Length: 378
Image 1 (cartoon, one colour):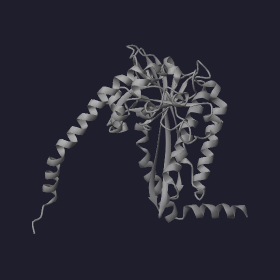
Image 2 (tube, helix red, strand yellow):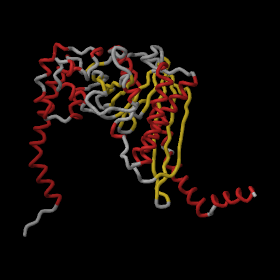
Image 3 (tube, rainbow, N blue to C red):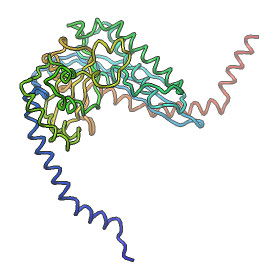
Image 4 (spheres, rainbow, N blue to C red):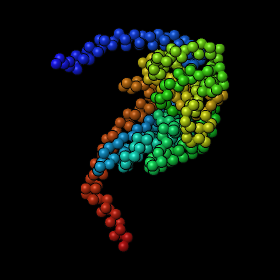
């Protein structure tokens, strides 16, 4: 019986499939080149002016959590670091920093989501400390969502996850109740709080496929962000071109240097975010990219039109792009890069905590301390 080893099989398969794959990719590139001008003319994609001189006070919050096995279970460490920068005529200097941390044991139940919830609370806590300190920042950056999406809702049987969820939901609600009037756009001179995420790449494609001639179709868009409704008829013809292109490849094709998508409502046609009392006042987003080779990210903002318009969204997008720096394979704002550098120590502290826990149990220190206290009471 004649056999073929794996290397030969892969070599043959690559030669057979290479022309077809290349042809499909070339067609997709041609489709993107054909559709991209329509998105630009309709205002769905916008170029952002890059200033030559930058003056900015910015605070960036970076969060991280990690797990380690211990005694048949797990321990965790969560931390958040806030870095404050001053950019004065393109000269960058640090202004200050702050941090929060939490270490404890944790069971297996919905570990990742529970840690995500702790990170959100820590991020909000650092924002609140900054606001209460009276120090001014033009821009405050978070790397966690502003609000809780439905995919974070716990199952009824996961009681510990539910407790973390309810605690985080309450913390977010209290923050916005106490501080909304101090933030832009409710305070025109207040700082802009923006969450930077990497998600929802299909948003602009989904919007383009709607019948944008109708009120129902346009409900996703911020019309105050200069949507050109005269291009509706041309947009209706692009669905066949978009059907064979993946959402990520498409948005990579239409977003160039210093560009962003139109602002869109993040609460339309998706499950309700929480807490609803705060989300009802508006949540908007836009995707942006600072350089052709950079990572596309989603900026999430609280509020709605007419407070958010093209001028204000361009201003936020421009600042985010100017702060973007290359960090290994990703781009991210400079203050958060500095925060992540501090957070690299977190796994080492988790290991140190685990060793300390093992030592305390082995030497019976905890029980001895309790018993000593009990004897003193008598």
